Amino acid sequence: MKQYYCLGVLLLCWAVRGMAAPAMALGYAPKYAPGFTHFDYVAPHAPKGGQLVLSAQGSFDSLTPYALKGDKAEGIEALTLDTLGVASQDEPYSCYGLLADDMQLAADRLSMRFHLNPQARFSNGRPVQAADVVASFNTLMQDPAASPQYRMYWADVKQAVAVDAATVRFDFRRKNSELHMTLCQLPVFSRDWIPTGKTLADMALTPPLASGPYVVDRFDLGKSISFRRNLHYWAANLPVRKGMFNFDLIRYRYYQDETVRLEAFKAGEFDVAAENIAKQWARGYQGAKFDDGRIIKKELPHQNSAGMQGFVFNLRRPQFADKRLRQAVSLAFDFEWSNRNLFYGQYRRSNSFFTNSELAATGLPGPDELKLLNPLRDKLDPAVFGPPVEPPFADGRYGIRHNLRQARQLLFEAGWRYEGGRLVDHQGRPLNIEFLTYSKVYDRVASGWQQNLAKLGIGLSVRLVDPAIYQRRLDSFDYDMTVVVYGASNSPGNEQLDYHSCQAARTPGSQNWAGLCDPAVEALLPSFQHFSDRQQLLAASHALDRVLRAGYYLVPNWFLPYYRMAWWNRFARPERLPLYYSPTQWAIETWWEKK
Image (cartoon, rainbow, N blue to C red; front, top):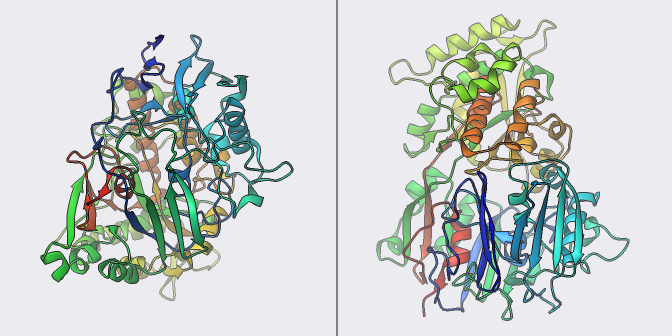
């Protein structure tokens, strides 16, 4: 039995071929040692069988998860496609081999090798080979129909090479602190899936030929999709899959309206609800079925970074170029009133792009942060060098009045003036803002904000559109403002470029929703690709957080340090919760139906 070790400040990995999954972790030793049999948050002997029905929002018209265009079917990637490795939900940033039974980072950190498990099989029975990995990578990076996020994510990968039938090597253009880890997340599909001469755009109704635990069973476009468990799933007994994916059938039902969705849940049309609406949670999850235990309702804690949810300004619109205007609009949003009157006091205010984590900036910049910020001082607002900017607060005694007076002064300083009760620019053009959304929820949230903005002479209208139209407008950056979530892992990296880089701002379909192209931010982003230890990553996160918060690029929303979940009482689950998880994926991966 051959054993491999990779040691370093950033990477510690072990691999015992044929015994347990190889592992890597960024900046710490992997939690699970050689010979582990299963993750701690699963029940290794959970029974198989039964079905799980879940809800999905809107509709779908594509079974191809990687194309830029189209609304992707829920679950298509997570259930049908295996990756080279998987993360443990008990660690900040780890990778345990799945398709790969050996992983080796070169001593010069300029290439990464993966050896494939000889047992790995696609759903049609054909072995997974290095040529499939190369084809998958090249498709995501080169297919003109592919989402641009992959080209940004793996921009530092020069090429993927099939060394032999079972070994693939990725060569890097330059050293990158986490590139070897992100390659673990590469989804692998068969090179036979896309016929010669076709692109991802041609595969909208052909599900990927892949090696995951489920295959598509049937679908009704826009209404439902079902996945059937592959009884011959090659990885069922691997340590990283033991006790997981226990349902014979997983089905998604689509709903256009949140109220209809809740009533459907209580009527038994689907089994598990992860609730995002405070009013629904406070007033809708009630009745005899909850009282007698047929439906269980719980608030489940998690330690995920909450990132930043907010009403983002589209800087591609010229009226938002002046930071003073953005700050004034932010001052007019009364979170405290909304939380009391609309959210039943359930929420906390998002105050950072890394909310609820050690990555969020606090206090004055430390020495490590100043090493990054001082060379950019002439490009930065002086506020960056003080305590981090906090969202506006409306106290109970004076409410929003003080904030509105401050907002009015900022608008005057920015050159706006009042004419006929409206705020106008130097050419007499009024300021009107359209807020784009696909959910009626934001009608209630926006109503108070509209009244406050009207006092400043600013018009705010809410544009409610179908989810499919919303996604198209989001991809083409066709909005004044909308609500977005800057997701944050516990080890931020390449995704920060997709959020904030100039290249992403110019790329349709990217996640640079603000259209941000700032030289100081651009200078900080490489710190998320090239760092030598966890401390440097923390310093980069704190520095970037300070700069973004001082820019007022969005109006911060709110977050919860727990999930609101309800489910019909015919399911069992492991006793132990993972630390970092999403609620429905946790149910899919680890629950089972009671016998």
